Length: 257
Ligand SMILES: C[S@@+](CC[C@H](N)C(=O)[O-])C[C@H]1O[C@@H](n2cnc3c(N)ncnc32)[C@H](O)[C@@H]1O
Image (cartoon, rainbow, N blue to C red; front, top):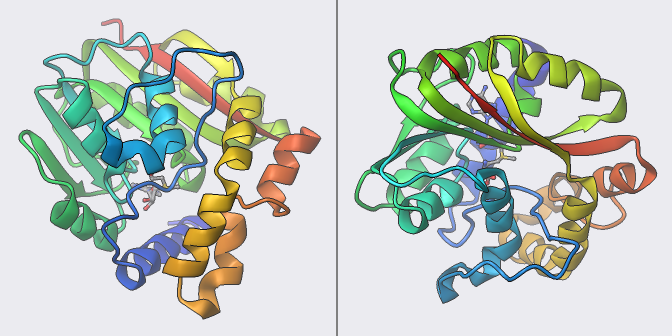
């Protein structure tokens, strides 16, 4: 396991074991449409997480999840898998994450029919071949030692005709390589977008709320380290998005056969 992956794993294990609040259910930067689109209908209880949920709605746009077996890889604190399970009518939703503390919180706080959480590594998924119709991966793959190994695993666990939806940040210099990795196992691209502007907009719109949550939820000694992680204004990732050195991409691919 490479050092970078070990550091990510330790970080997410620590966050899951030190901050056990059930209200914290998402860990992505969010998505805010730039045009005046009809707002996504949400349960009132989901409103605080609107931007984070909109990132899931964006990647799943055009994918019929009704009756499907859905896998989310890098499910974090379980908010995304829970929203999919409650809102999009899948048959089953499985979240997998390598941080055992995050899986434990998800099992404790996000329950519902057909929803389960499993510990496992994106690069060695603990599932049999052709066992899912849809694989979702939101803001997690930048932590993996090998994107190609992960995409090969996605291909393996998808049924023919299944969809892989993905969103994540990358250095501007890594965009072309990432596109190559996404198709390296034979998945066929259906849609691909640069959503940096939408993600940056969500970060700005959600900044005051997230700043307050970091103050309220995160133990004082960790607050400073958490600010860039949360993408708060003035930290390196929003600045990189604004400067064009960092991009946020989304894609939908299909396993044809
Ligand atoms: C930024 S969080 C995003 C969580 C969730 N998708 C969301 O949007 O709220 C990234 C997640 O990926 C998980 N992760 C990182 N590397 C992983 C790996 N190799 N296998 C499985 N999960 C991994 C982390 O533990 C963390 O929960």
